[in-house]
Image 1 (spheres, rainbow, N blue to C red):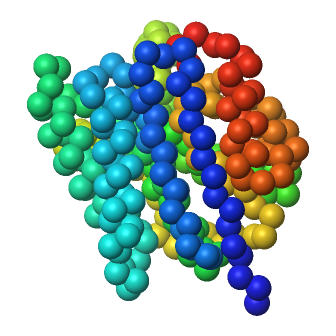
Image 2 (image 1 turned 45 degrees about the vertical axis):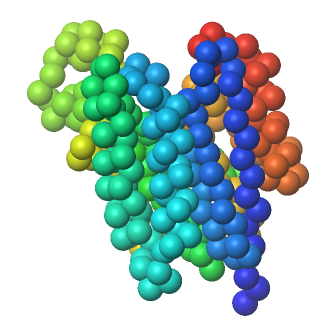
Length: 239
């Protein structure tokens, strides 16, 4: 069987913000590799340092990962290290809190594993269908659960939804309450495309726009560049 050899690339733009609080990292080794995106929380202290530190911790632990350690265990253990680092970082600031999201994938011999905390997302494009593999760990998620359970009135739901994008789970909480990931490997196909992104992309571009850009791009580096260029063209405030 022919091995799947992934192409990996990343790109980041400052946009209209004063500071770049998104960070990413990639390590590729033949038919295996890891990619990670972290988005520091601008409303808390040290957003840039939080995202950069979390990325560095994950990549360093990947370099030192024993081959026999399963990726789900690797992600869980790494998450604890990242959470402790960002928590201590926040305690050293005036606000006493810091935070970052994380979405990460590991690919080995055509098998995909992922980790997500917060509202950075993982998308899979397969045979023309763009699917989001993660859920946003925000207040909207809790409100939707309460609505399904019938424990919130329609009026209260609409009123509380004004805070729907507020994160309820993120790295730096000193104990992660919600996370996404997979214990069993997801088998990749030759033409699959994986996209890791912060909300600076998906809050600007529709899924149809993202899919069109993916399908019209050649290499992974070209795709990353085209996505960033399209976001920049939108010229949205605070993006």
